[in-house]
Amino acid sequence: MDDTVQALTDAKRAAGYLAADMAEDGMVLGLGTGSTVLYALERLSCRISEGLQVRGIPTSYQTARRAIEYGIPLTTLDEEPVPDLVIDGADQVDPRLFLIKGRGAALTREKCVAAAGLRLVIVVDKQKVVRTLSAPVPVEVIPFAVHPVITRLGGLGCVPALRDGIKKDGPVITDNGNFIVDCRFDNLDDPVGLETTLAGIPGIVESGLFCGFTGKTTVIVGNTKKCKIMTSADIVP
Image 1: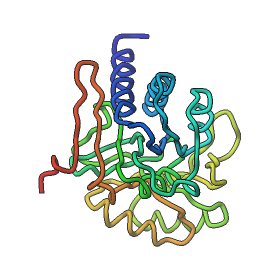
Image 2 (image 1 turned 120 degrees about the vertical axis):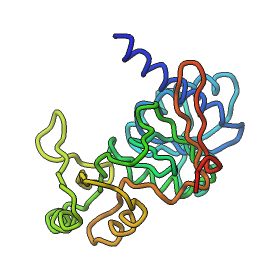
Image 3 (image 1 turned 180 degrees about the vertical axis):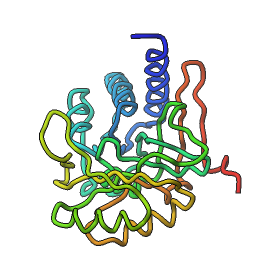
Image 4 (image 1 turned 90 degrees about the vertical axis):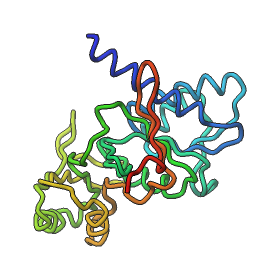
């Protein structure tokens, strides 16, 4: 592993560990999906072995499996509809704390848990912090409507692409049994409006734009020396 990759790995670990250290005894935690969140699970496992008592709500099968391996007790939104703290990652974060998520195809469950939680902690490395959102916006679509949805998406000025699976033939299938369409826009100057527009298209389950949670969001930007913390108080009008 070269120095650059090692530094990135160490930064992700630092962010994930710091987020896990925010968990308090008795809390119900939302557990997001992604490589940085896995470090949070690793740290939670250590804290549980030291006596911490928490339960987690996983946002994907991958996270559930890893949590079980780490000995983290699990629960559901049915049993615990208001998680105390949600730990998740992001593909991009802008200065307004607007997010693009969904590279791991778990965006719908992640948004459900984020909406339900009292606090949302986003763990990222510094490469994910941008001045303007520009990454492709993942959209989860029911298979029945994928072709008309792609046509509608193209009319919004983006280049939509059905995400293909890796090590399988055909499209990615989400944990909900749906497809992912990645939408590349020339600019995302109104992510709030776009999120609303996408939510109104029949056949779209959810989009990877997370613009409605800024008031309860804390972003931890990993660094091997000292992580940077961003909250709603840092937003400049």
